[in-house]
Length: 594
Image (tube, rainbow, N blue to C red; front, top):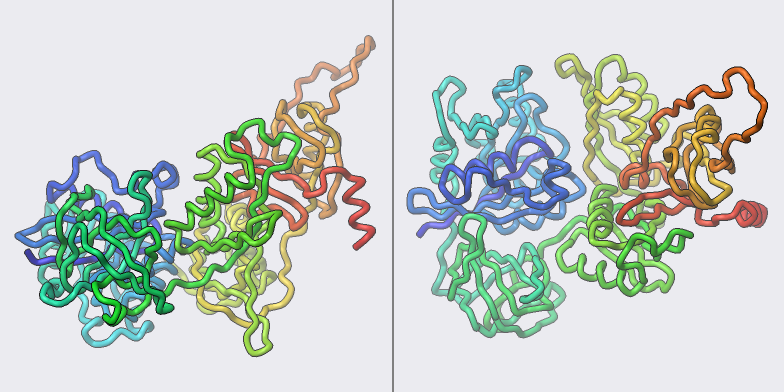
């Protein structure tokens, strides 16, 4: 049986998962109500977070499909997948056109010599710009240095949600057969070199409570069999021995236990606990290693600490330093974009690819019953040749024309420089190069400035010379000076001073941040003070108190808005901002020392 290995890549929300779902359904591999995004967080957020493997059978060929994440923070998932496949389907929205992550994933694909198939999706949108988007995709290929073979790509037009694909806009179609035919015709079958000695490479990891660490591998040469004794060669030259205790291949989305798998296929193996992405699995120690899989470095870091707030231990099941460490070690088993320094006794330093990357880890831990607190995210600086370098990102902003001036002003203060600006329909598309420091904490402000009508997408580009001081919105913190329940009477008086994060009746403690102050200085307040009752009647005494709904703190909002002297307290039921030093006396004493 011929085997073809493909990955579906795109910017977030351009229709990768919808297309994969329909391919699996129309080939009879899954039920009609199935979706690739099975994780609870993926369903809630409507984005793909983890890459997933599946396969379909079409006209005697087995097509292995890898569905990849579209958000830039999960770019490490895409990078390693691209090394293990033979071609990619690049999905582009017919209205939005190429976006930052489109550029990122296509650049990686072209560098590896892959020949993409382009799918222009959502052609039924009223604002679709099909011909213009096709031209933009071609220009993107040229910009990224595509060779003549890569420039000779096939374009398929699709409505993934309805499971329709066409080779020409005017064609009539009722299913995805044109796309499947294109895959069979344009993607070369994987080399079936079964006579050579085994060489395979893991490109993804999984974990099973019974089998331990699982490796999803691409078999390049030979055969891999259940019970084989194998040699694992690390990129640094270290060699370990192991035995294949379980072997699976994919059919649909199910893994099928098999006795052997051949060159060209994608398989899942168990039995080697020390295996890692990019290792070479072979039979003899003298076999040549496969090229290592390199993954871009993290760009932000923050500290994970044991929750020591006055409300610590009330809601969580896992609250100790040892339990947090064990959970983070387990996360490292599968999350290759993450790095963790366990050397400090007081905290664990976690390095990630972006705020969303860290927020997903924290949300998963919170739902599992962990209590934890984290410090403000900081960008990672480098020193090269005596020069200080910092991570820069390319931010693509689509904004209504009325708000473009405000956005340009704010981005300029944050050291952003315009590299391109052009009209897109009724909007303006502006592309900035900006330090990651400048983007941290800006997304919430951007939503307010554009009245929720703007779209901001960013991707990491490189480490560049330090850009200097970044001007950010200067707001202070409104800090509770007492412990108790928030009173509507006090909150009504505090509303005029800034934005509140808590509602009437919320339990508060001394040192908790309950809102921000517009003037920029921290302000200690008493939010639990009720109205003094007396036996005197006065006009207006019984008027009902009307409070503005609070700006409740979520994980992403908390990571964006917190200051350097604050912690974000995360429990299964609540997310709170607090000062690192809870009492005002301690904070004043520290300010005097500094």
